[in-house]
Length: 409
Image 1 (spheres, rainbow, N blue to C red):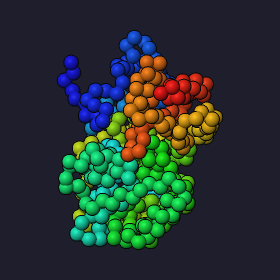
Image 2 (cartoon, one colour):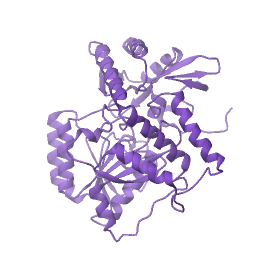
Image 3 (cartoon, rainbow, N blue to C red):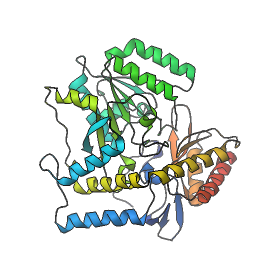
């Protein structure tokens, strides 16, 4: 009997796994009976670097230093602190020269709310906010995020009125559809304020488009004075094989939303990166703007992000090589498997038969393999986000077991 509740959508009110972890090491978590489980979901896509003792040692030292000073908490709306600027410099160095400011948040969902506010403050063209987003996209669980998350519209239809006027664009799955959507947007997008783009539909099952489509899309949006927000909460920090998906593109979004892998799941943390172009607009705006929450500026969250992003920078070559090896294993084992799958970098979705994905997940759990689920309007399946430090032979062995079980169902 538990006195806490879980509101878990179509998966009910119980936890997804029947496991009580007591410790973790490398790419495994261990239960009270010392059974180990291979974490192929990277702790809900947060723990990209794995459960590495050297990382935790460095973060523990920093946390202990702050706590010895009896300074567990600050908010950056009231105080200044050197770590605020140091972490901003670290993140901006990682994100690149096209961005020169960040705003700290606590999660990907809060990133969406902040981005909606910024679009409303400086780019609202009419009485009502007008927003574009992809169907089957996911942007969080707060009220604004629920309004623009295409994948959850059926679940969230009871929450009305929604934020602004949202038009969902079909996420293309062919060159023909890409061209059709671009033509459609050419005709309508001048009336809109902002488009939220999840460049790869991660929660929906790893759907991708061509690079050319994304470049043309941003070009059309900017030509029509539509703010472009890239939600890279799932795709950021090497998950696609680059630092960020937008690094593959010629054109730059106005805002980039980051969370999850930004601090390897140490604490709730996120940020929104502001492009140089948009920063000039914000500086010249006479609009009185406001956004804050109690934990914006929490020193523990910001310190952990600073350490993790520095780790990414120091180990980038090895990380990129590991992700390339992971993707090669996906291709090697699945190409002739007879299964339907989609992949990008260290992201993989394998389609299952209807009403089978959760059964397969539980079978794999008993075998000590943890995967995740996806479900969209047309299919369901399991998704895999391996940690970057996974041993390749371990991944191969686990993926063979997964392929066998999906095939058997």
